[in-house]
Structure formats: structure tokens, C-alpha cells
Length: 400
Ligand SMILES: NC(=O)c1ccc[n+]([C@@H]2O[C@H](COP(=O)([O-])OP(=O)(O)OC[C@H]3O[C@@H](n4cnc5c(N)ncnc54)[C@H](O)[C@@H]3O)[C@@H](O)[C@H]2O)c1
Image (tube, rainbow, N blue to C red; front, side, top):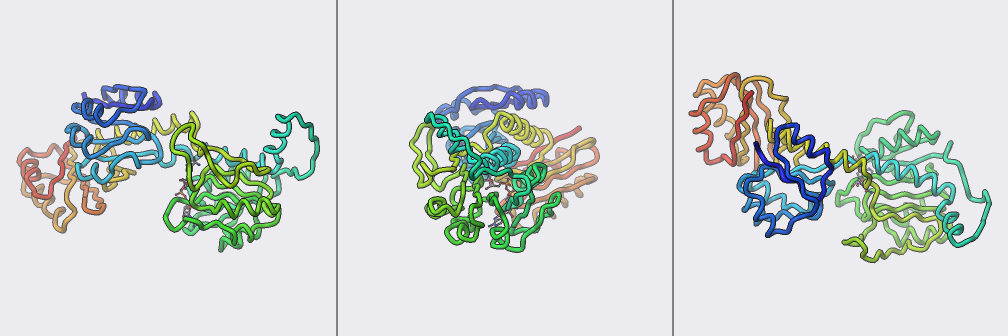
């Protein structure tokens, strides 16, 4: 029985998922240091971590049985992805499991800003009873402008329409409009029409600073601004000026150009202390439900790789998603990506009389991965020849 070690209090659904698939699972609540990992990893096939466990080349060298690492979180900076790929260790994460949580936060913020709740609740805490409708609006009938119409942007579109908002969106890629949402030809066209602008672009380097003074200026007077995407996208000094001038009536920010590293570290921002501004510590995706979804998603990726060779959505190896193996044998071959390897594989299989029923291939940088399904099992002679190829990084076999 292969062993899975799950660190950092990963959601129990991951344990259930892996145990049901036949793995022995050890669950630990905390992260481990480099030295501790070096001690415990021999004998471990699957490793589950969150953001506090750092996987270095030394750790990987001390893990001869490790085949896959699951990052039960969004980011993968804590893993040396190149070193893992060089050693043939596949790494997975959960890029989309907290989509709904982000959307719900944004919906809450749209209503809160439209009703000026940050000011109202602050005054109440200060003992001031300020009962007034001034500056408070319903969101029904207002126009939400979504910049970046991907996983989060599209879900937000659906929920905002359900509240009676009109939705317009701008994306640099062709995206299908959901519901009655309207695609805008340019960002400026969106800014000219939206009562609320919400950013949901990805973190590509070209997006640094795309939202600054000119974009705030182009927004409608007294409109609202939300960023739960990436901190580096927005010029917060420019936003401060436009809030102080009253041009922007309120803003909600969950992400910042510089974020404190550790729990309890001080938070500095030009947006602190401004009226009708909601500041949250990058918690858009932080809910119990998202944790459960992440646990389910990543443990599924680890299971599918270990039991059937799927590297779908891997962040460091070529991504191949073969169908479930229902009969015969399967060969997974991770190799150096040079011309002629596929021909070499197929030549060996043909010479050894294997009847290939399916073949799935992907390359990524210097590596290639080919999964070959065969009627019946694969002969030992074919395996030996493939093993001895100078291009082989690893060879794995599955059979039903
Ligand atoms: N606040 C949080 O806790 C939290 C949680 C999850 C995700 N996020 C962030 O939310 C953002 C959106 O996530 P997602 O899962 O929807 O990503 P996604 O990749 O599904 O969608 C991003 C969309 O933005 C578009 N885009 C990129 N650059 C653009 C530009 N300059 N102008 C217009 N469109 C542009 C892309 O074409 C794509 O459609 C990401 O930056 C992600 O990191 C934040």
C-alpha cells in the first residue's frame, strides 16, 4: 500500500479520498522543516502540503519514493518546481477551488459600498447614531463592469445579474458572455458605463500597474471600485487621490502591491483610514468551503496520477489526461523532449508485439510524457528496452 503524508492540517476530505483509493494516509497538523522532511520522506509516495512547507532540492533528493506533491492551496512558490520536474516528481495545486468564495466576497462588497456600510458601522462603534439615506443606493439596476472574465469574473457575472444588476465585461481573450452580460470592445468603454468596476484579471507580468490615474479618471463620477485579483495591478496612490476628491465613492481591496509576510505583521497602505473603503487581508478565497474543495480537488489529482498516470493540470510536468483504464495495460513514460523519442517508443512496442489501443502525449519545455494503453499486458522485454533508453526519466506501468 503506497503511503501518503499530508502536512499542515489539510482538510479531512483529502484523507477520506486517498484512503478510499487504497492509500495509507498519515495526517499531521503542522509543517515540517527541511531536516524533518529529509528524515520522514523515505517511504512516502505522495506528499500533501500547504504554503508553509518548503520543498527544496535537498528534500527531493532525500525522497526516493516520492512521485507526486499536492499543494493544497493556490500558490506553488514553496516548491522548487524545476528541481521537482528534473527528478520526475509531479506537482499539483488547486487554482480554481476558491472561485465561489471570492465571488461571494465581491458581492458582499458591492452592496456594502453602495450602502456605505463601512462608514455607518464605524460611526455606530464610535457611539454616533447617523440615520440617513444620503449616498446609499440599491444595486438593482446598476451596471457592474467586470475586467477579466475568467473563472471568477463569469461567476460574479451570474450572481450580479441575479441581484438585478446589468453586467458588462472586458477581457483581452474571447470569452462567451453569460446571461445578459455585454462584452465591451475596450477597457475605456467599460469604464465609461460601469457604476461598479471589479477587477478579476490574472497575474501575468503585463498586468502590473494597468489600473492607475488615467483609468480612475475614466470611471464615472461617484462610481465604486473593487480589486480582489492582484495587488500589483492597481496604483493605490492614484486610487487614494480619487477617493479623497470624491470622484470614486468607495472601494474594496483584498490584495495589495506589498502584503505583510506573516500573521500579525503591520499593514501599510495609502488607503488606510479613508471613508467608505473596505480593506481585507487577502481573504477572498479563504473559507472553510474552499478548504474542503481544495482538499477534494488536490487529493483527486494525486490519486489519478498514482493510479492511472494522469498529470492533468500539473504545474511542472507535461499535462496528459488519459481516460480511465478499464482493461489491458498502461505505460507512462516521462522522457527527455528530443526528436524521435515517440518513434523509438513505438518501435520498441511494435517489435515486442504490443497492440497499442490508445496513446496520449504532451511536452513541456525539456520534458515529454507519453501514456500508452495496450491490449493485454506489456512484456518484460519491452519494458527493459524502454528502461534502457538514454531518454528515459521514468517508466511506470499500470494494469487492470
Ligand atoms: N483575493 C483572493 O483571495 C483570490 C483568490 C483566488 C483568485 N484570485 C485572483 O483573481 C484573479 C482572477 O482569477 P480567475 O481564477 O478568474 O483567473 P482566470 O485565469 O480564470 O481569469 C482571468 C481572466 O483575465 C483576463 N485578463 C488577463 N489580463 C487581462 C487584462 N489586462 N484585461 C482584461 N482581461 C484580462 C484573462 O484573459 C482571463 O479571462 C487572479 O488574479 C487570481 O490570482 C484572488
